[in-house]
Image (tube, rainbow, N blue to C red; front, side, top):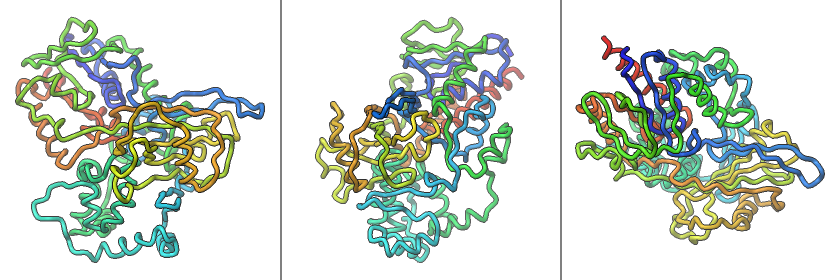
Length: 500
């Protein structure tokens, strides 16, 4: 390859880091330069793990790991397991087996705090649980409902989808809570095809019935994480029987390991505190302006992991069909809590559905709790200080609360109400405000993404500008890693075609 080739990655979150990592692995260092820019002083985006030294009030001391972003990972992504293997992180794994309480027990605050059934037998007992009485009739009746997707409808909100198939109350209680846990968003605003594409496809496979479609999908041959061109080594075997996993020093070990690899490569340059100002496309390369001095050689290819809301300003091209007018972002206020040990339900945690009267009926100074994770149950192995209870409360999102100085007592009052038990004063707490951290793709988002990608294949971009990130391909860590990997492979393939 010509030494003039230069690939620039915009954004150093998980998608951008993964893109740069695979570029550095797949391209010869002597032929291609790689530059990674991020506006923040650190890489990793919303992933942040902190180890805290703490005393428990009884003379014992130790450390506790706190997460400000994602805290567990699912082993259903071949790209993610491959990355764990390539980075040599197998010995750092902390796994939660499918038989553990954290894997089996998940709760909804309906109220009261109610254990969700995780087997058919448990589901049949739901009529004896007052809060879950609407569940069984809604599920049993769904396969008997006629296909009711309106003709010509290519997408709809998550709430609309579940209301059609299961009824309004099911959609409010269960679909809204599910969306709270993943997107911290209002299920009435989230697009179904962008957020739950497999369920949309299952309804079609079941000829109108979601449940029949899911049953049919199980009978079809599927490529799991262990199939395909994944270099997973022993990690795949390690993940058998695992529900979720993390690392001894938290999820941030993943971006830190990628950063260390990139720093070891002579053809890679990492620029932090480097905000991108503008990008102009020519037939041969791109003119990029940033808040710092950039390499003299302009990039011939770009992978952008920047938020879509920044694209209209960065790419002042009226011919591009931007999606920003149809998308918005969730802002989440996290509260990490460490208590003296006290009894609470054994499980992963609980989610809170949308209020019966809607979010606007709640006071603007309400805690607006979306859910709580019982961190000690799932990942207590990360902590050296034993005998404490670690939790994380998530709030904000669709609640129109004022994000001023958070008020701890209102959150503790909410926790007491949800658990139905006294809650001791915490040994430690911290609030973390994650502003605009999760994209909320609306209905028809997938169509607009396809239009944007098609426009980027045409001149002057010519397929040399790739889009990755949570808005482009999914919000999970596995989605972001997979998108970065595939974008890097497409760039490498394009460079090789150009060389003939």
